Image (cartoon, rainbow, N blue to C red; front, side, top):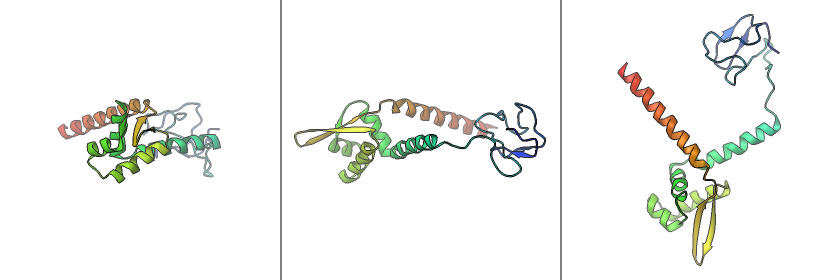
Amino acid sequence: MIPSTRSLNRCGSTNADISGAIKKWPSCSHEIDSACCFWQTSKGGNSLATMTEKEKIRSESRAQILKAMAHASRLFIIEKLSKKPYCVCELTEMIGADTSTVSKHLSVLKNAGIISDRKEGTMVYYSLEAPCLLKFLGCVETVIEQNVKKQLASLRA
């Protein structure tokens, strides 16, 4: 339900007497039915549905995967394991950290289901279980490049 009283969207812009089906906010390029802008009634309630339990669980699960990846050494490990399996000693040498530190990083990635391990005698080799994450990292690289371009453009202006 779209209220006809004063409303506030997530972008922080307000608009009085909104009664059209789809109308843009003055200070927002998004339409009111987009993910950016939601309606609040004058009583403070949202007219859009709240997050369902299923959506909450899915979002929390996604956050756990992203948290597991959220370290430079772990991202490095993911990239290296996309090429071939490595043992802890090889990864330790590449990263330049203590074996215990690298083992902890591997444990975090393994617990998240991102990597797996297999024993060969006394050696344990780690492999990437989710190569699709490399596409995500490619997307991250694109965002970084766009941010750099924006920063350079603002410096030139």
